Length: 154
Image 1 (cartoon, rainbow, N blue to C red):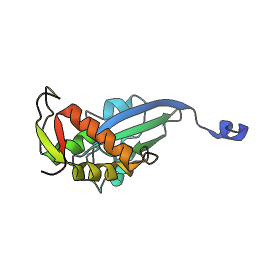
Image 2 (image 1 turned 90 degrees about the vertical axis):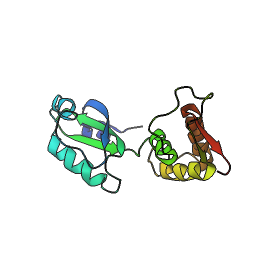
Image 3 (image 1 turned 180 degrees about the vertical axis):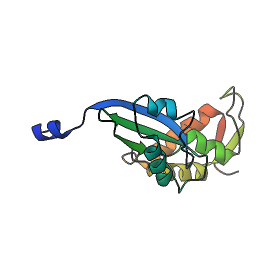
């Protein structure tokens, strides 16, 4: 439970924004200006910080960002790892998922691919509490819903 001192020190939150921004490609422009500008946030500060945090990823990797905007026009943000569907598409070498999952498979992956994706996702701060087995089961479920078959060996 928060103490009285914590309640006084906390900044009042104006909004929580969820965006998908390509890694290393945050620039003030058509996609970010309307969102950040409506809350009067410093776009250049966000772009510089975001690009610095995502420089270890390949360019144009979609990154989920949660921005907390405060009433004094400051902000904090958390960068999450790319979505599982993006990892599965890259591993399978496909552009889009199946239009009829369960009836038509567009590709197949091995359990080793699933394990590697699970290890990458486990580094995400929101998935640290999940076991590797639970993450693998979630990834297999996502793959099945995308029309990607999971096999033992190719």
